[in-house]
Image: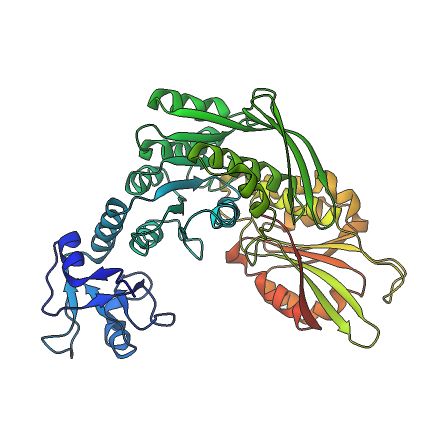
Length: 480
């Protein structure tokens, strides 16, 4: 196997010192998932990674990147010593980016970064060797880690770039140096750190700062803040491509048909009609798929192959994964579960409710005569001073007309609970744990249940409790 990093390559990249020679086939920051031959990065976060260096080496790590030598290790231990571990990881990331001839796509946006990253992986894997993170590694350590893990033989790299505060995106974008950037959308999220939506748009637009010469910015056409994005692209002198439903979009959605298990979309570009299908429902997915098709054209991939492979994409776990939970093997009674418990803001919650509304419950199989659409919604975090109003506003979402019952989890979701019509009010609880004993009463055979919330509110516990009511079987996939 070709080594990902040799000792000399890593020393050259970081300026560090190491008494031993070694070759690494991977890069790890967690001893629980570390594979034999990995270079272990001793980052300090909640825990100090130096406390786990000995364990990493015992598990077969090729070496460890450290800023001090942990006690008890021999003098000839394979330790790459640098002044600062995070800066050392960044240096590895920059070196990995510099040595590859891969084309690079950077993705940001308030909603849909991970789903779009996975769409890009699915769409292009049949045409080139694609490198992308297995998880949402989009922050100050996740981006350099993804770069440091990139094989030099990669043909395409796809990187998410996220943010929580102003000034975070531009330095990461300059590290990534993408040939194409995609901004999925700009929506109310992280408003604790930004004055308004215009501030979020300006921060998202900073991804353009990293574009390589001759690069392309693929931007949403349908937003009030679109002019902020296009002005940034114009100032940078890059090629701008707009996607969406707006009449001025270069890639324009002309029709989207949503079924329970699929999305069929028509679009128009340069006077030509396009037809594409996704094996999961969601109008927002159709828009993001259109951005993927724009990236395909910008990078010179075969659009027909891209469209075919894109049709096989499914959302990542926890972001709209659809399952069938079998309650009775003999009778075959079951309920549908949509696991969207990884993240939430007003835009993604609205999209999830739209998906639930498009699903069809099964009547006359449960205790109740009619199958129901049920939403279990947890707090949307980091929304700033207007968070209570934003939670209450969900009560006006059109999809709620098709939803029988809404259970609310978290202090902020109490505002939605109060704003709902009494006929749709389910339980309100302060924490997800309080809802767990009620799980058997939350659902009946024939129902379809959506669980949605920010990761910090832990509604994933409710997902697990619902799964334990029966035997889960994968079904079709579905939201953010």
